[in-house]
Image 1 (cartoon, rainbow, N blue to C red):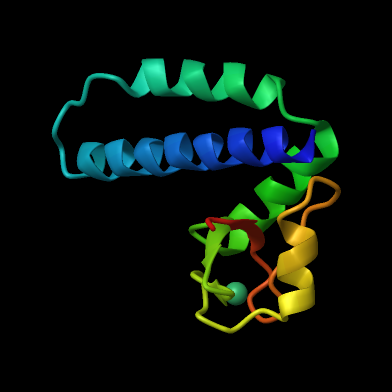
Image 2 (tube, protein in one colour):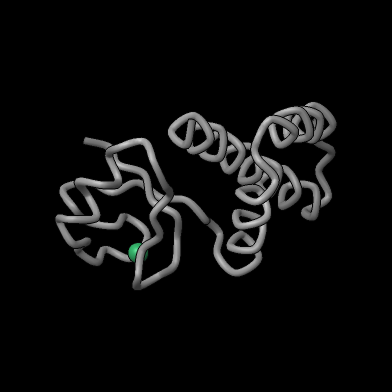
Length: 111
Ligand SMILES: [Zn+2]
């Protein structure tokens, strides 16, 4: 269940970053297609993510460009701090979402 939510969150973040990119290009005075489609995709996707998780994500996104980052070889790829192995063991299981103690980002494991 949580794993599925994490995947959705990662996709949501991708879309959010694309929306930001499109917005930046528009600010330069270029007209961009796809903005409406991106917004619509975001709406649909966020509707299938559990509300508390979405809230947590939104709050993090207020502070950080990326709210959810991968962990590779026990390293948080948001701040490059090594994560305790015990968290890695639990994090690969299905039960809860872990955040990096250093940068506060939500974590998912690549390996
Ligand atoms: Zn971190």
